[in-house]
Length: 121
Image 1 (cartoon, rainbow, N blue to C red):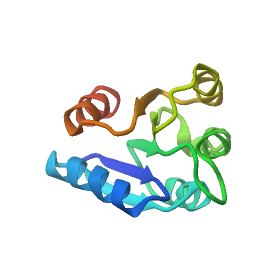
Image 2 (tube, one colour):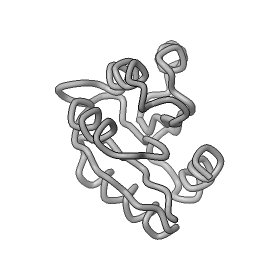
Image 3 (tube, one colour):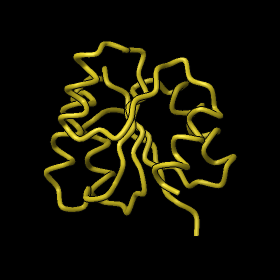
Image 4 (tube, rainbow, N blue to C red):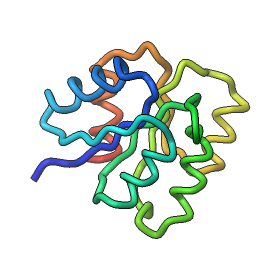
């Protein structure tokens, strides 16, 4: 059975690149356009991992993680940031909120896949 990955990014082109990378490796992908949309989809579906952007309208990535981590369905689900940000303070906030890992854009497809395989199997 293939694992399901939720990808949350306000950029359609980034979502498409992530989706192509993951489906090409046999993962099922659910897409969301911002943190609020992502939260609705994360709590309505059984997901094995979440890949989220940081800077998005409506609800940013850190707020998404804080809200998602308060939901019982998030237990054991790794959340990976995929963002242009590389600031140490933001990384600390993300980790405190419950993020599992951090990938800086632009990313290499192999890099994303190796992280997803490590956290989601």
